[in-house]
Image 1 (cartoon, rainbow, N blue to C red):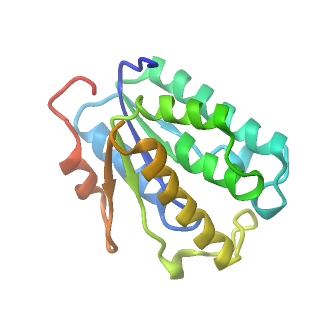
Image 2 (image 1 turned 180 degrees about the vertical axis):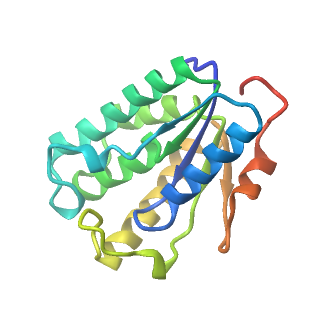
Length: 185
């Protein structure tokens, strides 16, 4: 298993459900509690490849591996890392278009163990707002959400703690689930 010495929380789910706002709020609250916090942003927005329904295998692999590298870098600088996505929900986009791959399943399953907590955010229909990046196709959004749930069941259950939020949600639900008095996992 990979060893990450800091507390690492990933906000996961489909696109357009409020993960980014929640991740920023969590960073702020952890900083107020004296933590050195790094935010790992969503890699798809930085991808030089097409994303959403037009994605390519190279694009999805770039996103997945770049995300892992960003988590490693952030973990070296902070005692708390908040991830706007995780390897698991990034992998859901890959699986949607290309299906699951045994070697990637193994990587994701092993990497999941480095998270202190996965926070699954539900779909909130009114939050799918056109921003020039996200797909506005609600069926695509729902398909990704279902794949995230399938991947949680297959690759994450029993490997790390999982908090499933209900709407309305706020950062206090996450803080209550964290070992804030401990130094790490």
